[in-house]
Image (tube, rainbow, N blue to C red; front, side, top):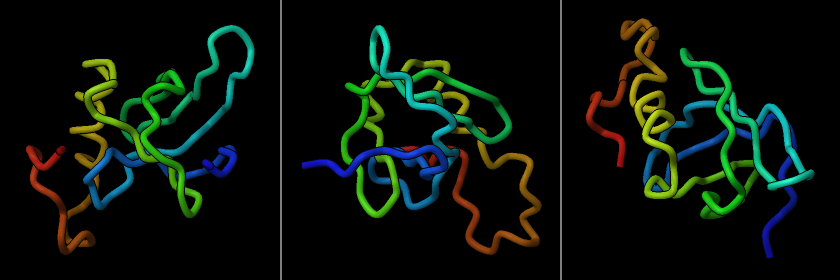
Amino acid sequence: MHEPIEEGYMVFVSGAHEGFGAVRQIRPDGRPALVIYVENAGDFTVPLSAIESIQAQKVILDRDRLDPALREAIRHAHDAEDVRFVPHAPAEDSLP
């Protein structure tokens, strides 16, 4: 059984070690979905069917179930970070 999702949970793609954003809103009406804020890109709506798991206040998404625009935003979520302060910054193509 999955734990309930709450606003503020970090969001990851399955297999990635670094989060790319956070849950901003849970939309239960109509087609249940999450609104996820992606760093450097803004808000995206993600269907609940894209969730692979929820654990330790982290939402893990299945990359294959994500919209191409969201996958592209995830690839660039950390582009604005200063690599002097991120000693192990992932390569741009490290998205699983």
